[in-house]
Image 1 (cartoon, one colour):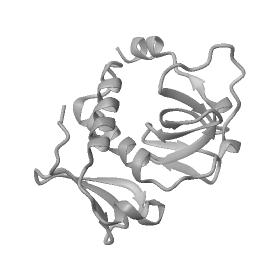
Image 2 (spheres, rainbow, N blue to C red):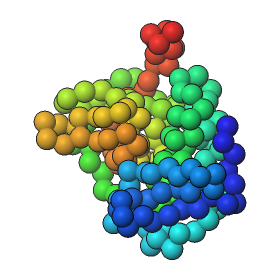
Image 3 (cartoon, rainbow, N blue to C red):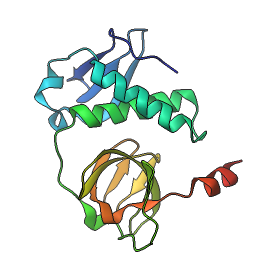
Length: 176
């Protein structure tokens, strides 16, 4: 696991119009989040906070238990989740893209499935309230409808009645 460091820094890259994470080892992670989507605080390019580091580590260790992603992917997912959790401006729910969940077994995991009219995909719940959740797309590409899509790690807020559980045992069996 790439350990969070007080030398890590959030960078607002005007050239790429994206939020970067400077990992202080000649490595930078470019997030998919445009500068206009970010809070003013992160535009001042703060260091990685203790709160950022704790959430990053929590997400990394949680996802590691699924045995589905390699360490580099876990790091990338956890850093993007941290950026969304603490530095993305609030967004409105866009639940109309997704089918309601009518099952009797609610999701108890943070890795969930969302079903649009175009496809099904896995998402990570980054922030949760009683009515809605902010999720990031874990797929390379997720088609919302015939015109709109989400790239990997892009965030979307949905009502909780759109969240479907993922049956991890089946997924592990299929990918083995």
